[in-house]
Amino acid sequence: MPAIDPSAQSPLPPEPSAAWVFRSFPRMIAFGFGSGLIRPAPGTWGTLLGWLLWVAAVSRLPDVVIAATLVAAFALGCWACQRVGKEMGRPDHGGMVWDEIVAFWLVLWLTPDGFGAQLLAFVIFRLFDIIKPPPIHFFDSHFKNGFGVMWDDIVAAAYSLLLIAILVRLEVLS
Image (cartoon, rainbow, N blue to C red; front, top):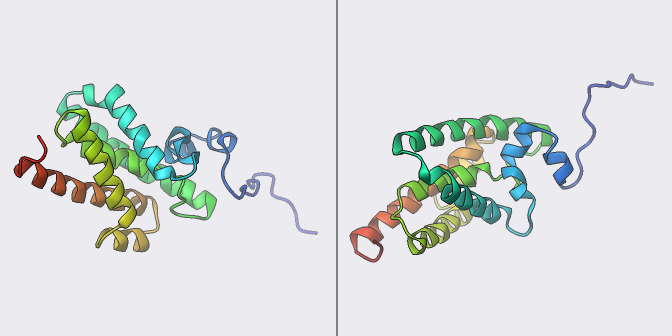
């Protein structure tokens, strides 16, 4: 009979639970403080949490601090998503939504103020994140690590910001 390793982790449930997520800091980050557990559409719920955090706290910071926060949150997400993805045996589990949160902060930072502009930015970002036009799909399917989880959403944010900039230039959005 093989020896049982007491340090081995118990098998993962078919779908992570709140109890499982909140037992570990990297899980809490990767799962967006539990927002990634909400079904259906966990990415949308994570993006909504990102919007709420933006309005409540991040948007109140000076631009240089927002920039530093984005870089730090991206790095934290690479680390947390790498650890949790490896632990789960699924490098980009749908419940890991920190990538949506950080990428949407980038979109909101560079979007005109106002609820209407932010709502449009939300819809545009979600569409690009869901549809994954090239090269987003390439990054999503080829980079199976914490960086890859985070990076494809940053590219979706870049697409979103380009479309928002065009709408501002055409005076559709101000």
